[in-house]
Length: 219
Image (tube, rainbow, N blue to C red; front, top):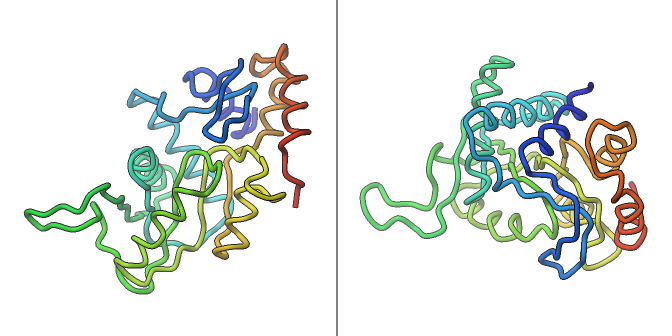
């Protein structure tokens, strides 16, 4: 299997990728669901970090620091930083934000690397649905220092329309000039179902109908 196929099988085995009927935050009824909050073991985090590191290495993006937004982004950034060191000998900084500013001790909004002007930052997230997390945390990053967010990496691109005809990934690139790379996308998942790498064949027609209705046009 390719590393993308391995990752999709890993998501299914970890209970992160599920099939059925789910109501999303958008109110849409989806035949599949992704929940990175289901990762709960050290072994899973080791594997997860490996897949993010592989994707980052594949796209050859310049960076100094990995940033993971609270809360789900925290273990993602940490595991990716460890994997970059172990797998590729890349010693990356990492940091994440607090939901509330710490008012004692050293104080501050961030934990980890103290961001500096000109620092190249990769934004690590699980799944992008609307781009809301980026819109909320990007001003925090810029308030800390004049950093350069060189890219955003997510685990899965659902490739769904946002408020308009474009997907959240496409809209983010347009609005902020930040390229978004995913380890896999919904079409990779469909291919794995068809190949029998994962289950879900009984939901394949529903998934394809869902994409027909809500999917954004491919670039």
